[in-house]
Length: 96
Image (tube, rainbow, N blue to C red):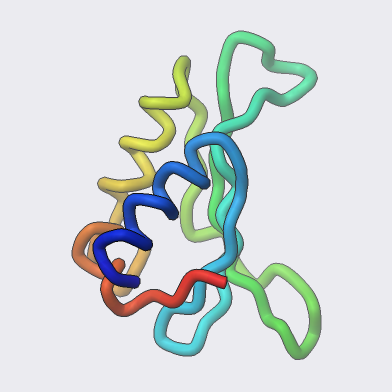
């Protein structure tokens, strides 16, 4: 992603979801959302998807926080991408 795409991507996952390719792997990112049983916390997660088998292989990131900002910050700082943060790996990702 280039710098403009990165900003749009972060804005998108703040209140939605997105798919990215990173080093040939498909990741699905669920932005911050409430669960029915926990109305005082937001949950955010990332799924590593196997497209050939159409299934989740791994959940390399998940967090529960009090605010959407806190969820997003935890995501941006997590070392999900080969031990690197989103900011360190974003230029090697393709958003689709």
